[in-house]
Length: 105
Image (cartoon, rainbow, N blue to C red):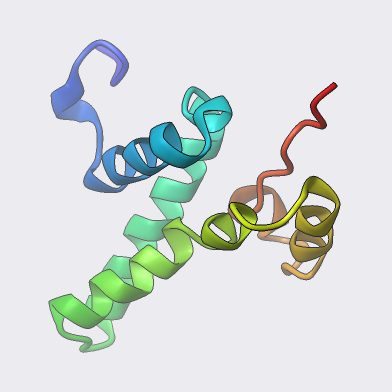
C-alpha cells in the first residue's frame, strides 16, 4: 500500500511539510517528489544529529531547518529572488532543498 492511500505510512516530516505548504504554498502541497525529498533529508538530518550526541530538541531544530529551508523567506520574496536563493545552495542539494516555483501567468 502506498503512503497516499495510508496516512499511517506518511512520516512526521512529510505531514509537517504538507501542512505548511497547504497554508503557505498551496501550489506545492501536491508536489510529492518535493515533499518526499525534503522529508527524507530532514529525517536523515535528525538521525545524524542524534547519532552525533545532540539531544532530541536540538536534533529536531536541525531537521526543521532542512525541512523548511528557503520556504519562510519565499513567502516574502518574488520568484526571481527565489531563483537567486536557490542558486546559492550546493549543487548536490539544489534539487532536494530548493523548489523553484513555476512562473504564474
